[in-house]
Length: 263
Image (cartoon, rainbow, N blue to C red; front, top):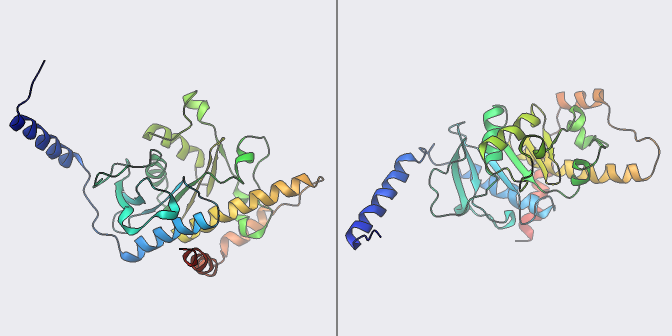
């Protein structure tokens, strides 16, 4: 049995701390306060709208370095504060963990950012509205104009196809890459029996898409229950709206006011 003296044990702890510091990724530097504020607001808004509950997470690509992103420690989205925000590299290693618990599915964010240089915000939700479309053969399609971005199609990622029976979590880079590949160039991908991933060029657009995707799913389910053919937003209508996107500011300011009023 190996016994360590107190001095030797302290030396080993110091060496391990030094080794961890040596392997930690470098920081991109402090993020602007406005970026941190928008990340916090996105968490609060999505919680207030019922798209996120105790689970799910939101990230923003670091404005100073596209190879870093910002996301909260493992905490319920409705409770996120500035002190909870951590910086990660695209392998989803924390720059300075500060002893915090991390989301096991943070690899969703890093792998999407690797695959999609056009994306600056990633949201993972367990949105109740979308789950039925992830476990049936009915595709999620746009039924109202605010969700017209869905006209390009919404793929469904089946974790069992590549990884067999798992805990259904994206808890490493290999699984994250598979999910990112299924997302492809789309704004939304469903995760079978789990939720979805929504992306955008900025956090306001990603937040709006996450909300409107959930609302659209609920509306579509009602429309299908009424029977008869459903008149979906056409690809042509979707393209016209893609080329002239509506400003998310009005919705964002209202959602912000409603969320903050309840704090």
